[in-house]
Length: 261
Length: 261
Image (cartoon, rainbow over all chains, first blue to last red; front, side, top):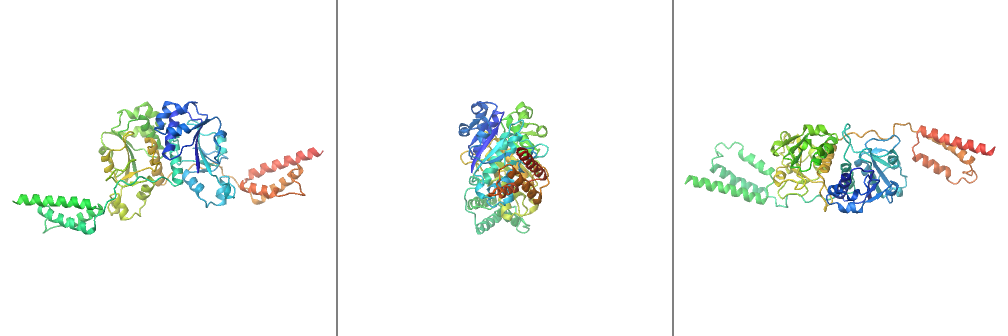
């Protein structure tokens, strides 16, 4: 779905750069600034520094004077505001709203709550996320024209997220709702798990070695071997691990043999 | 669950302030810095500026020299790293891992994968989130000692989140997993929905008014009234709305009567 981030009357260049970076990490690149404090904000040093390589997002960004000019091609407006407005659109958490927006099974009541008709053809195919200024947030009139007011659930007594951090959260939730990105492959390389038989063979080897080095008394073994067995089970040993552990046992036995000579 | 955020070798004071702010918005306050670049980082101007009022988090923060000193009282270590390490702990997305961590129904296999015994008493009651330096990320040895490597799913070609933005995302996901905060009450104040009868009465009033002002031809009404009926249904009218709409109808009729005189 076409996705645009719109910053309205942003004061801090660093936040514009941070927004570009946050958007790009989540694969979005359509940024519009409405009446930013600095006309040259896209080229300021702090912006570029905080963008940290998201230069293409800055290069593609547009600066316009009014919110109207920022809205071409996007029909669904999501305000972000800490303080709900009387008579404003419904307040929802991002996760709740995105699930709803992308779920084709909404009830008519659901659809009407955010201003859509029953006809499913009227469902939006482009979405804009609106962020107000750092100091004053969004103007009432900009909230009123939105279909929903997204509220990030925060500590009630300290609800003020940094602007770029709020963009990061919204971009992240929206990307996950759209299907997300794959994680890189897990740290552990593909390995061949040792068979239970191989583990038991290694344990038998260790048992001999532990007796040889005088740690295990065959007359009073207590629970030593069952404990080791449990430990190695939990460790999900690979064939390579078995090889190493057998090497240790072999070294113990050789050392014990040398000590006996 | 006891929750700590640990920043290792952080370079930028702004990120320490941003971290404090991000933590506080999600209701966390236990911050430890391991060998930060600036010994006085908690008192630097940029730190305090970016903390934006989260001064209590900064005041409670500790600075230590080694990761070991930062780990008292927390048993479950979550590394955050873009690049999985060979032989490192399993890589998981935050949402996936937090659901798992807080779900009491894990399988033994699940538990063993992150290094826990079958005995449910060994399950962690304190968690630490580790964040490496801005330039180099986490050291291999710090990743190795962690139980899991949390990877935020990002655009594969641009995976570098700002440090404070990453803290914001992890804090947000962890807070939601722990049960979350309530949203503020929705924008719309509690109102009394108009009854269907009241809507029909208002529509009848409008029908007369529309005839009076010459917009509705009673001989050829087409679908005007059904359309208005649909429109007002979607609008979920309140009693106050009915009052206003009847006022409009009344004014239309009075104007039409005056025009006839």
